[in-house]
Image 1 (tube, helix red, strand yellow):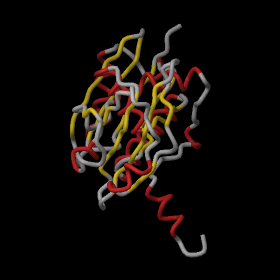
Image 2 (tube, helix red, strand yellow):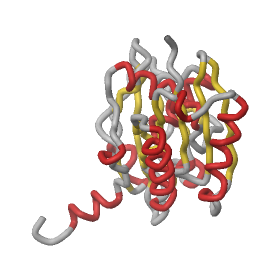
Image 3 (tube, rainbow, N blue to C red):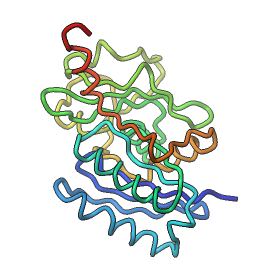
Image 4 (cartoon, one colour):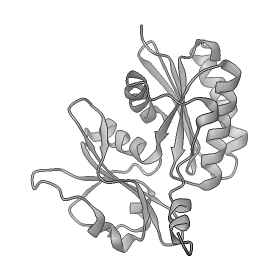
Length: 230
C-alpha cells in the first residue's frame, strides 16, 4: 500500500504545501514573507480538497524543522502539531537544508549539494550533502551556522570527478563563498521535495510524536556554547 503524506514548510520566505497520494504529488508554493499564518492552512485545505483527501486519510505529516527563520520555523511546527494532534497522526521532521538538496536532485539529478540559507547577521545556515545509492541524503559533518568566509575551510573535500551544486539564498547574498560549484536557481525549499525524504524516514521508523517535536535553530546552539562557564 502506498503512503499518503502531507508536507508543509514555512521556515523561510516561502510558504509551501505538498501531498503524496497514490504515488502522485500535488503541490503549492508561494513566496510570502509576512503572512505565513494566514496562508498555510488555506493552502493545506485546498490541496486536500483537490486530492479528495481528508486528514484522517493521511499516514503522516512532514514539516520543515529548520534551520531558517525563527518565527517561520515555529509557525510551521505549530501548524503541523495542530493538524497531527487533531487527526492523531505521526510527524516527520525534515531538514530545510536537506529539502534544498533534494530539490537540486529533482531539477538536475545533483548528488553532491552544498545548501546555504542566508541567516542574516553576516552568517549562513550551511549543510553539505551527498546522495547515497539508496537515495538518502547523508550530511557531511553537521549542519551549522557560519560566517561566509569560513565556509571553504569547513567543507569536506570532494573527489575531483564530483559535480558539486550550490542551492539556497545564501548563494544569492554571498555568491563567492567557494569556487568550482554549479549554481542552481533554487533559492527556497519546496514542500514537494520533503516528500522523498519523508518516505525514507517513514521506512526507517523515524517518526516523531506531537510532544517530541524539536526545531532546528542552530543559532541558539551556537549562542549557548558561547555563554561563560559553558
